[in-house]
Structures are given as structure tokens and as C-alpha cells.
Image (cartoon, rainbow, N blue to C red; front, top):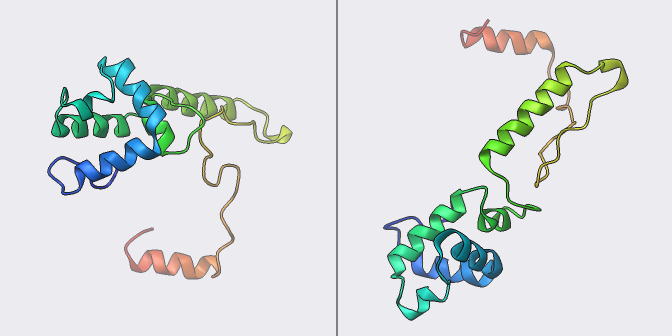
Length: 140
């Protein structure tokens, strides 16, 4: 969520103005397509500031909105259901692929997945030290 745009937090109007300045086109599109309103309605008084802030806050939370995609610097918006389906497709393909031929490419996402295809670094301590530390904390 965008800081300062949550209901009741100070700075909501200023944050909304900054969002309009930085992400104008996605906001215009989302306001028109989702709410049937013009973003200009905020400035003419047709939509009051608290409502404008609440509507924009929801756009920022909705991964299928152009506003959310723009904020996240994604290539395109994507719904949560599509993300889940992409994850399931990746798991299905991975489970049914020949590991000798290498890892299959994941289904495309509108954003770069951190560490995708990369393994973590080797531990700096031995497995015995790790096991002892886990045992000391009650993990087996």
C-alpha cells in the first residue's frame, strides 16, 4: 500500500496528488474504466477528497489495475487468480519434467521474480554447527 494514502493518515491528499503526477495515465484509465469517473472529477468537486483517496487506495491494492502495475513497475497488470494459476502451472510442469534436461522456464510474469532460478549461497558454517543451533532452539 502507498504510504500516506490510507484512510485517516495525514498526508493523504498530498500523496494522492503525487500519485496523480507520477502515475497519471494509469490512474486516468483505471478511474474511467472501473469507476466510470474522470480523474478530473477530483479537482472539480464531483468526487470529494476522502472518496478519491479511498478509491485510489483500492486501485493500489488490486494487482489487476494499471495503477498497481505502474506502482510496481510491472510490464502489465495481472490478477491474483492469474498469479496463482501461473504458480500452479510452474509446479505442474516442474513435477512432470525430466530433470536431466534442466529446469523448465517459468510461466512469464509481468515482474522479475527475485532469485528465480538461483540457488542460495553455501552456508558459511558446517552442517554440524547448523544442526546444533537448531537443536538448541528445539528444532529437530
